[in-house]
Length: 98
Image (cartoon, rainbow, N blue to C red; front, side, top):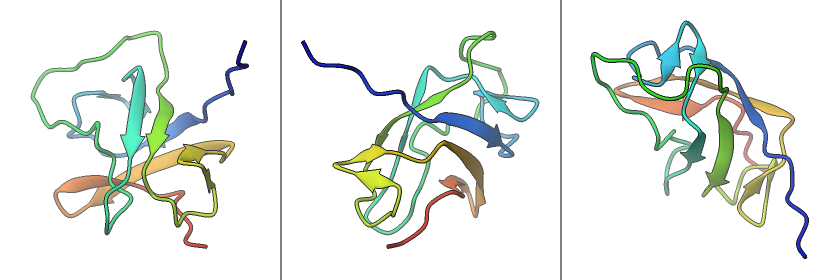
């Protein structure tokens, strides 16, 4: 049997245009972070409706930024993360290059 690790929570999301954002909280079940050149939140979706699970706060399900100091074998080990705006996308503001 494999023990599941505790995934970091999305402590704050200030990208108000995201459908999963409900007053600064992300309500997606889990988010994916990473691109080749940025720590984008790939769960970001801009829609006029609110989505997700109202009584749930998102977790980091996967992180593709292997060069982040919080990343170990593509899993985030930060205690929590913050998501903020980056041009027309959303980025992990907790990303810290090794």
